[in-house]
Image (cartoon, rainbow, N blue to C red; front, side, top):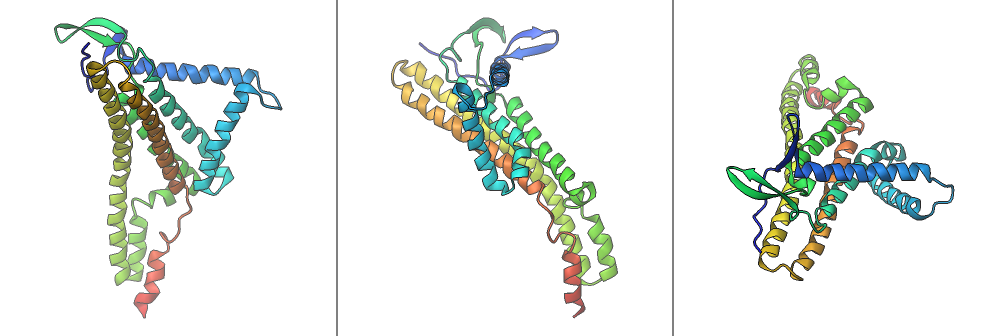
Length: 278
């Protein structure tokens, strides 16, 4: 039995007004519903001595919190970052894994696509949609900037990228201080481009790996439907875990770096000025 290779763009299954509900959007909604139900269960069955599902949830929470502590070295920061980092990790992991459930990619509707009737799958892994991974990447980077501004103040944070203040101060110092200030101004502009690069790398890495896995399993299922794809499905379980971990860890690093106190940015000109005077 031959399966068509999955397209790069998610396929719409039906429309709600002008809003196209795609197969990847359905999978992401399933993940949201799952965590919503789990939250309600845990909220209503919280006990002082954890048992069953509460025990599992607290174990996962403590495990993730331990990793966050290892990066931040600050429990207050860890508790602040945990909802963002832990939420992204669990959502990406669950979305990747439910994409391996039998029926994903094979159960669908016959719809007219570009003039031809094709079987459009009802379910596709959510992270095979670049819109989804891009949205999460934008959220992660934007959250790092917002928390960075809250931690060190707007003007001090903005001075990491646009160092006009250092240039103005350098004119009163003269000499090498002016040159250093202009170099730091150029470095600050490069930092702005690096923020865009963060979004691109985060989104494309996750999308590329999950989409490649979907294509691989589709090709294998087309060639030999039984037994042979099983090892690759276990491999995709590992890939899903690794990709969720990488995305969450990079987000954690961005958050930690953005909220770190500034050392030397404001004082570079001042520290170099006396050397110039000698």
